[in-house]
Image (cartoon, rainbow, N blue to C red; front, side):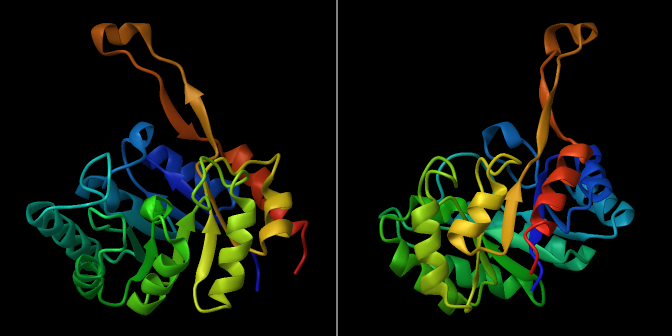
Length: 239
C-alpha cells in the first residue's frame, strides 16, 4: 500500500497548490488560525469543480472544544448532508461528551447522514484521556481513519503513542499522524510509527497588505513546492 499525503487547505488557492504539489487528498476548512472550521458552501463547490483529487470537508461549527449541544449537532448534520449532495469524497468530524469520551450517539447520527462518504475522526481524539478506549469506540462507529498527534502538541512529540495506536488498530482503521508534520520529520515519523497516511498544511505565511488598512492581516497558504517535497520524501521510503 502506498503512503498518502493529505493537505489541510483553508482556501481555494491552498487547495489548488496542494493538488499542484502532488497531494493525494485535501481536508478543506476555513479559519485555519483557530484550528479550522467548516468551510462555506461556495468554497466546497469550487474546490470540487476545480480539483481532481479527493476532497474531504471538516465538519466543525466553531473553534474550541468538541462537546456540542443539540443546535450545534443539527448544524453539523446539515453540513454533512450538503457535502454528500455536492459529491464530496469524505467528511472529517468528531464529537465528545463533557467527560472527554467519544460521543458515540452524536457521531453515529452524523455518520448516518454521511451515507457513502468516508469518515475521518479528527483531533478531538487528542482530547480523550483514554485513547485506547476511544480508538475502539471509533472503530465500532465504522470510521476509516483517525487524525491524531498521539495526544501531544505535535506528532513528533507523540510518536510513541502513535506507534502504539497503529499497533492497536491492527489494520482495522488507519492512524494518520498530524500536527507539526514537516519535511524535517515525515520520514522519521513514518519509520517510527508505521503509519501510512500523513496530514499537514504545508503552509507559508502571506504577509499582511498595508493597502487593506484597518483590516490588514497575515494569513496562511499552502505552498505547492513544499507539498512536492513532502510527497517525494514519502515516495523515497519505498513500499
